[in-house]
Image 1: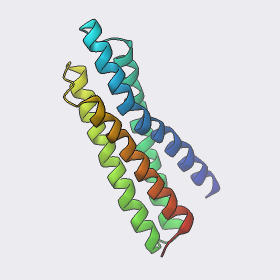
Image 2: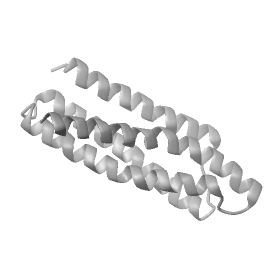
Image 3: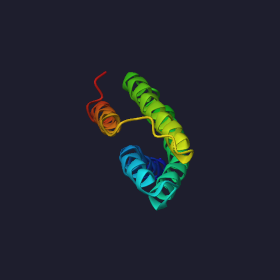
Image 4: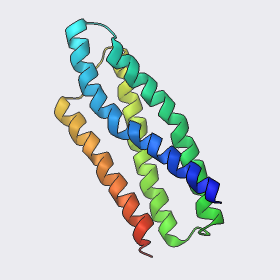
Length: 137
C-alpha cells in the first residue's frame, strides 16, 4: 500500500497545481485576449494544464478511495474527506467550464471573482488536510 500512497500524493500534488493555477491563469488569459483579440500562448498553456491535471485528479480520487477502503476501512473521517474532495472536484469542473468558455473568447467572470474563486480552493484544501491529519472522528 505504500506505493498506492505515493501515487496518491503525487497525483494530488499535480491536481492541486491546476486547481490553484488555472483560475489565476484565466485572469492573465483574459487580459491577453483583450490585448490580442485572439487565442494566445497563455490560453494554450491554461488549456494544456487543465487537461493534464484532469487525469491526475482521476487517479488521485481512485487511489484515495482504495486507501480509504483498504487502509482505513472507510473510517468516519474518510467520509468527510471524500465529501470535501467532491466539493473540490466540483470546483475543478466549474473551472473547466470557464476554460471551455474562454476558448470561445467568452470571459464572463471578473478578475475579482476569479481571485476569490481561487482562494476558495485553498480553504477547501486546508480543510481536507486538517481532516487527514487530525482524523476528528
